Image 1 (cartoon, rainbow, N blue to C red):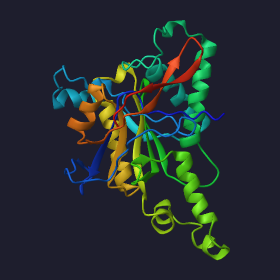
Image 2 (cartoon, rainbow, N blue to C red; image 1 turned 180 degrees about the vertical axis):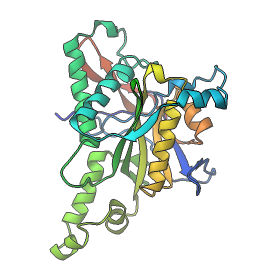
Image 3 (cartoon, rainbow, N blue to C red; image 1 turned 135 degrees about the vertical axis):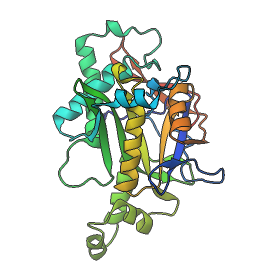
Image 4 (cartoon, rainbow, N blue to C red; image 1 turned 180 degrees about the horizontal axis):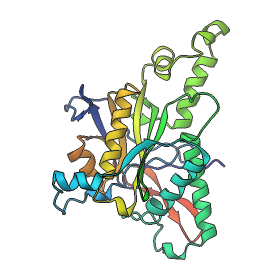
Length: 311
């Protein structure tokens, strides 16, 4: 069984931001309908997908002055991960430590105590996360069918946070973001179904060209923000916002997208404040039924739980 999991958390919301001409995100008008997601994918097909560990932006605390913010960001650099085994393992270990086991959103199964987790059980969780990140962001021979990039924020003390950017298919009829696995299969099958001469014609075509010319009109290529996670020592330093801004810049300037979407828990007010208030994202769709993933320390595994959600 492949380590793919549904990652639409309990009480999740989907946000959309439009990229302005100058590279900044602007809030879309009420009539805009570019990206929506109304329900989660099948649990056996969806991969880990989340973007809501932005806890340095808690609303009750006053916003730092520009001088304080600048000082806090001194020495922080945001760079793409190389995707080699070492960098992916570092990212997987970071996510298990600071997202799954110690996130303020409490992603543990009811009653679980993270201090009771053995080193062997923790290594198992890291292995599963490693497999998932490798599948999406790791080194491969040749070129990926769909673009993906893992950005990391670092200072002299090491890794501070990370965020993933991925291109996926979006089904306008069902209001669903198609899983990465299904998206890749649909593109590959569309080309494979052609005759030899036409297949050669599309051999080096981009995903956007294949989508626009070979796939049904209800499918379009979109850019998603995922896997946003920051360490405790980076919070209140604007690292989550910096990662999102760099992701937006990459999506617009290198991948030529004019919009980006993400999922976030409905009850995660800090993250929603970051996305809506600071970055200009807009809630565009809801989901009444979705499966969320939690850490079951007692059994040493990720478990799915049914939750009412917004997407």
